[in-house]
Image (cartoon, rainbow, N blue to C red; front, top):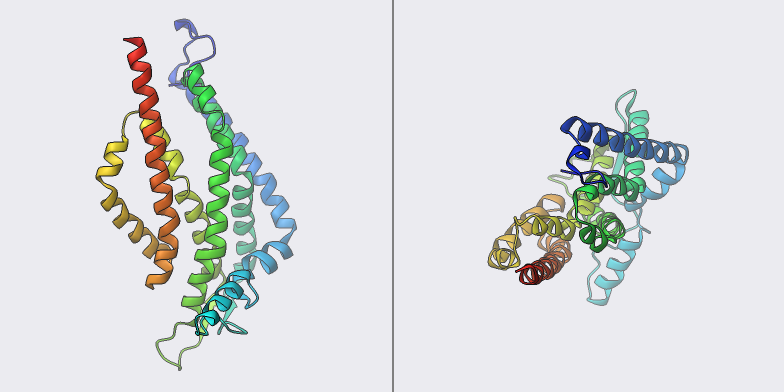
Length: 277
């Protein structure tokens, strides 16, 4: 585990010291999330009318792009003036609860770089000085990947899911009236799950560092990874092949990047081992 900067035995942190250190990092991270959640709570109109309900509107950028692409190929898919469903709240505290939890989610997304920074401060003392130096860009890279994933989930996965599920009917006799919590849950799940999936290179980086994963292992089980990616894509997208392929492509690209990262780390470790021997 982590040690203080002075690595003498008497200065080595005890288990309780680690727990205390972790507690303060969690408190700071939670405080940052809550502060930004309050900001999001105040700007309710932007959070809901512009962001949350954006994918429900026909002028959402993704629909306009897909409509133009479909028309160029002679189809009229994704070209509509209004999605055929309404959103309603059927509980007394439904709207307030949605407002509260959506603000907390927004706070977490906005505070993600600081949360990662606090995580890094907790684990970095346990690394060697050269490892800390080599991983200096960890916070920036992790944050960029997370925000890219959130944007991908919001602008690609969310509209594809809403368009499919919002227009799907088993019979013309059934009209779609979606509960507010169900709609927001879909938007939240698409954005956050994509953000976390885009952390794959970071996860592979650490797994390779501790010796649990090698580039040979990743290459050997590439076909199984493909199956897992398709399964995950099927879970977070509507059950049509086009949507699943659109979601799977960037994840597979990230997997290949992860192999390159793993190979580079192993190469450095082998080079260092030769020098020491």
